[in-house]
Image (cartoon, rainbow, N blue to C red):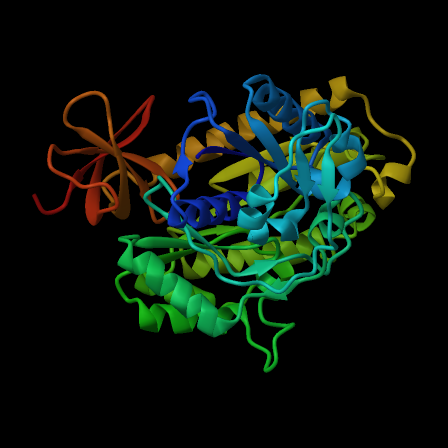
Length: 428
């Protein structure tokens, strides 16, 4: 039986889709593209913005038109199951916890009688390691799910539940399997990985399991996904300095205005955030630091926005992920007054994206002549080049005719072009 898996959203969703693929491959399902006439199409949806909801519905409708049996899962399916089940031709709607039982759901799929079957459980199931398959040269290992924070704009806690952590023993087994499959970069991902281990008995921590993984798999570099600024532990920098953890950190700022941060219920001030970033850069000068910005939050006036612009410009970010505020049902921010027009939000997005572009160029320029640790991803269509990802999260074009996908090597950056950084292997 042929199955296609389409995924929207964050690295957690990508990791879960890879786990679904691993499970299906282990049971002799053929995984195909959605354009290759699949018998079943699984759409792993996202609900972080209204645009994500729309894209989820569009993917579902396209899958239905292809003639496949269609299963919708993910965060949009979790929080808007009634809405999504009204899509004509959709066979099954399952929540996030249902992904672990995807085999049973496929086997029990009944003939569509004109309405969708809906199976939604509260997203509080314990985490367990799943089989993993990915066409990428880097693997995602989901170590945590859920969130105990209550940011006023965010629907994720409703979709993912409270924070739950993967047992350290299961994590070691999962990492060992990924290592045996040839992966030399493993991305530790979750909704809120800074809270890892607080729910376990005995309690653990992100710092503890990173140290444990490094000792167990010294040939692997580990990358941390997004971290909340108030949960960062300085001790992690020692692992970055020695090269066992990638020199790349991502802290979601969301706004450079203390007024807006308070309305968002982010739990820190711009002063705290600035001090953290400056300290990290002073200890690790070459590190890549990225951030998220939401612009157009209700009540964000021109002065608030300019505060954000000035704040971002003075900090050494290497890139920004910029989002216009999107009103999410059942969030406190949706009830606030003074919502901004789409035109104002888009104008502000453009300004911030231009800042991001300039910061990325400056960061790439700083790498000229440097030695970087790179994982090879693909061979380019033009002869003599491979693409790779550096430990500081830059795309690198590597001049070579004899590399292997997934290979880890040192390269020297020799030039910067419109297409990005060009490098050559340090040892030919």
